Amino acid sequence: MPRPVLLAAALVGLSATVASAQDGGFNLPDGFGVELGAGTDNRSKAISKTQGDAYAYGIVDYVPGTGDVYMSGSIEGVDSSGADWETKLLVGWAPQFAGFDLDFNAAHKWLIDPIPGTDNGAWEFTANVSRSLGPASARVQYQYSTDALGQTGSFSWVEGRVGWAFTPRLEGTAAVGRREQRNSVDYTGWNVGATYALTRNLDLDVRWYDTDVDLPADNRYNEALVAEIRLGF
Image (tube, rainbow, N blue to C red; front, side):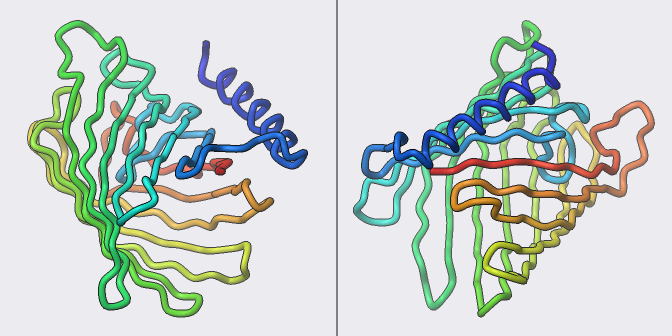
């Protein structure tokens, strides 16, 4: 199914789920959370994972209820090495210390049905440190992989992000990051945008992305205005 059609189908599904939730017909077991979403482009570390095309995704989270450990599984649309989908399983630990929110996680990713011979599995490790003071927020993120998906080898990504909550429903954020990677382009990427809570469960995010890479034959690094809708329970 073409991604624009997939996006439309996802938006219809989101609307139906919202209506069901508002009627009290959507209940999850204790400790579980679900997020569904769709967007005009799938951006990660400032570059496109869908060559600029629309995509949809789904995430299931589980928090056991004791301690700060959590787990999640996800699937998202991509355009990578012949694969249309990428799945991920993740285990994390998110404690608090001295007023800071910490988050450390390890994730394993798989491409679904890529071109034979493609490196279709990868480990990715992430550390986040964040802090909120009134309407202001800030986060520093570090990510590392020993061997990324496809032809890319090891990489590191460091990103700083700041945010401001203008109202209880509207938050603006801006971020800049640097990626150093083996067998691919090193680059700096950034984004700026805002997230608006349409309802208690439904958010709309509109964001501008760009990088310092100029490769006419590779549109993953191109600047783009991206809109994404997210439904979470």
